[in-house]
Image (cartoon, rainbow, N blue to C red):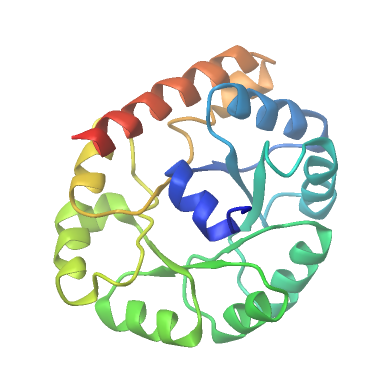
Length: 215
């Protein structure tokens, strides 16, 4: 049985976030992440030529190699466009019911940004598959743990401020997965063509997540 996209995200435990890249380096970046053991990747929708990048990445890797999503999706139109370009999941910084409805219409999971219990409930009841706890660096692992008390049925993906120094705390608090940007996707390394750095970052983070989950 083939795992659903939501299951693949949960199993991987890491969503690597690519921002401000270009079509020439997007595929190399994703390939470096994949080699390092991080196969779930989000390209933010405020990146220039994002639709072409999502399409190119989708066509360059097999379904079991990479799961590609669109991030920073603010409206239903962007959700539809990125999904049609090949995005397998949608990530938002905040709750927009139209985005969730569009994702559900096209059969792709949505990870919806929240910062309060009320927002988490509203997003989940609207049909979100997971909630992106944002900004996680400000809210902290204790917020994840507290949220899990009454709302343990809602999968959480802390994002924004997650690094090697605190990733274990987020999983200890009950996180389903984490969203990670610059701690893995080093924009300076990409600009210099040092994709081995991206691969190494991904591998170290992968190992940290596996260690946290095994405790």
